[in-house]
Image 1 (cartoon, rainbow, N blue to C red):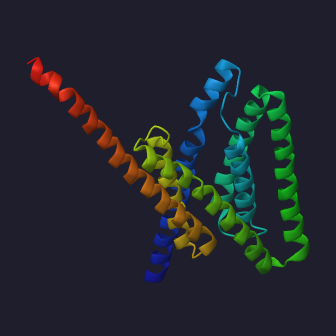
Image 2 (image 1 turned 180 degrees about the vertical axis):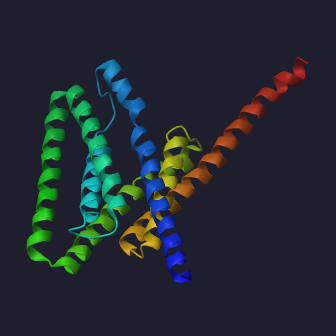
Image 3 (image 1 turned 180 degrees about the horizontal axis):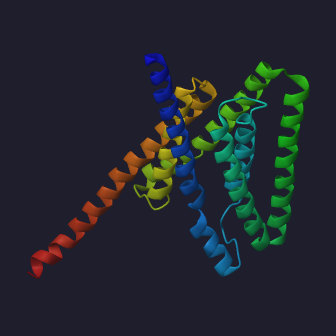
Length: 238
């Protein structure tokens, strides 16, 4: 009886972590809305890059495939969150391509086709060349590589923040949402005893936490510098 109750509690916490991850991810997927509102308003992609959405689409497709029962049973919440992410990335890419210059439009369309070709190849190879256990390993390692690459991309921004001592290019909301999503799925992966989930998301949690620390440090430093600059004026004009 006790073991049944403990099992039920364990399953509840596991499901809660996965559901929270889905909810937090929805906020993360909405974060580029201001960028695309600007693109639509100005009818131009300006200097914005579409590459993060290409990487995001490929990552969502691979992770969605990993969460499918035919690859790994019992982690359907991984498939749901990444299927929603796939829709968001496709919408963002559609808008970006619509307003991009001709040369950029052609390049982005070629990359979009390449993403679907790569994903179709992954599906074909995983179904035709591997049994159930082998399929988990094959797609699992690909999802690890994809997630680490995605979570590692902010290292460029972290370096920029340290060099410029400014958080202008590292929005707090994006860093915080990334932390919540990666932490939730790290917890979900631990409960599911799935290293293909908790390893890359654990790295993502650490990197997002570093971003939050840097944001607090350099944001406070900027405020202190502003106060110091204004102090003589206050003293001069009481």
